[in-house]
Length: 134
Image 1 (cartoon, rainbow, N blue to C red):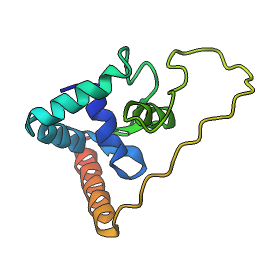
Image 2: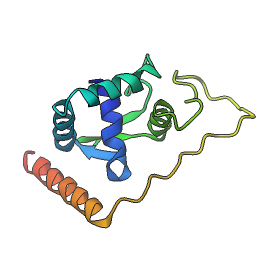
Image 3: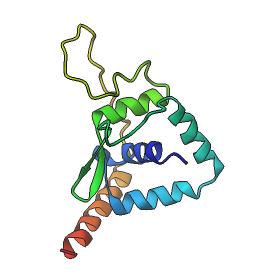
């Protein structure tokens, strides 16, 4: 299983692309034990971006006890899944003016209200557990 691709896939499934560490670990464990299909799929996706590094390339940011996928992370994930022609530069370069159109990030399909509500409840509960430890 490719850890970095799995993190991107998990984060993109959460509202606002943010998940607390407890949710990430739980989802990661579930996928890691789901069988060969997931491992093969992440390996195929990772082959599209061989030098993938989700933190140094700023595809994922660390926030408030969790991680959030960035707009750049969504674009790279779309590229890996074949929804986009090219990912754009992955290296950290100085900003320059370009005549090329900017890449627009497609909106995610709406999740059902009950599923979204359940995830928000889990996030709140995780924050409360984390606040009680300090």
